[in-house]
Length: 193
Image 1 (cartoon, rainbow, N blue to C red):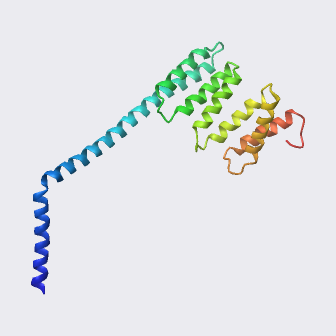
Image 2 (image 1 turned 135 degrees about the horizontal axis):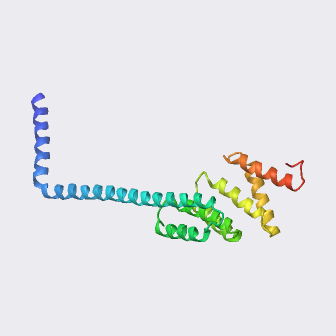
Image 3 (image 1 turned 180 degrees about the vertical axis):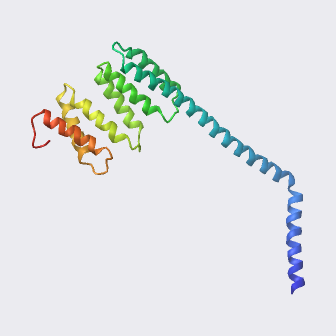
C-alpha cells in the first residue's frame, strides 16, 4: 500500500511537470499578461494620486488668495471667481470639485449675486451625494433662501431649516437650531425661538 501511494504521488508530480513543460509558452504569456495588468493598475493609481495632488495644491493657493481678499477693502472678487472656475474646469475629475463650488458660492455672495450662489449651491449639493457635509451646505442654502426677496424661497428656506434643526441624524443640527432660533427671534416669535 505504501508503495502504491508513493507511485501515485510520483505520477501526480510527473503529470504536473509534463503539463508545465508542454505549456511553458502559454503560461509565460499568461503570467506576462497578469503582470501588465498589475502594472497598469499601479500606473493608474499613481496618475490619480498625481492628479489629486495637483488639484489640492491649486485649491490651497486659491484658498490663500480668498483669505487674503477677505481682509482687503476693495477686493477683486471677479478675478478670484475666474480663477476658481478655471481650476474647476482644469481639475474636473478631482474629488475636490464640490469644494471649489463652495468657495464659488462664497465669492458670489460677496458680490451680492444670491441667485447665482443659490444655483451653484444646488449643483454642489447634488454632487456631494453621501458626504457628511451635505447638511451643512443645506443649512447655508436655507439661510440664503431666508434672505431672499421671494416669499416662496423664504418659505422653502424656513421649512428646510426646521427639518435640519429637528433631524437627529444631522451632525450639524446645532447650527440649524441656532439659525432657526435667530430667525424666530428676529421675527419676534420668542416662543418658537
